[in-house]
Length: 240
Image 1 (cartoon, rainbow, N blue to C red):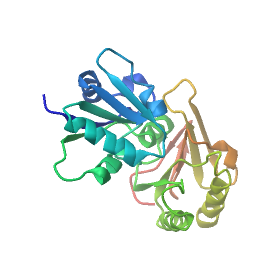
Image 2 (cartoon, one colour):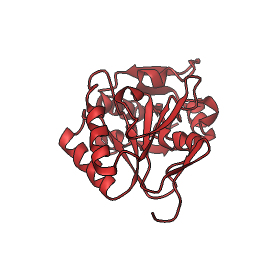
Image 3 (cartoon, rainbow, N blue to C red):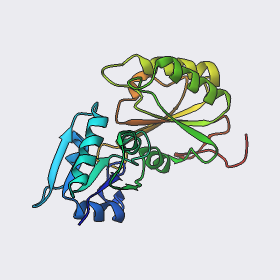
């Protein structure tokens, strides 16, 4: 059988949110490649080799998967959520050279959408997603995009809001949001969605503090029309 590479999204955390298409690819795989905690979600079995690696070696991971596929192996690169949202699909294509093997991108439920569903419908109108990590882009670019998105009155979903390596960046984000959106805008923190550690919290920007977010948290900021409906948060589909 000729080799192939599938880049698969494992969803936000709950096993029942992994798609049947992804499960079928994992059942057929000879090799699974990915960041250490994502590979750990794949059960070992005979005939399957696991290749866990650090989170800062995406291109090396992609090249390994391509090399294995060229030898006839059936390789699944695992990502959390959806592989095309701040994940491994783009890294794989960046590593593609002449004569690539068969490549398949298998979608998953990204954390942003799982968090929105748990909260209600905060992304019910136009929205954008911004990765707040400055590992792969400068802070100046993050700030510019953040301000423009707020000025355009998008609802916003933030990935990687606050880490131990950059504990102060999210405080700057909150200051910018208060400046651009005002203190009464709703902001939701969805941590470890669909896992036993899930925690949901919605407050105003005036009440938000940096310690409400970590790397397992998706942060969703509403637009000017976002409102509460009992315990839920939603953004009307009509323009503000």
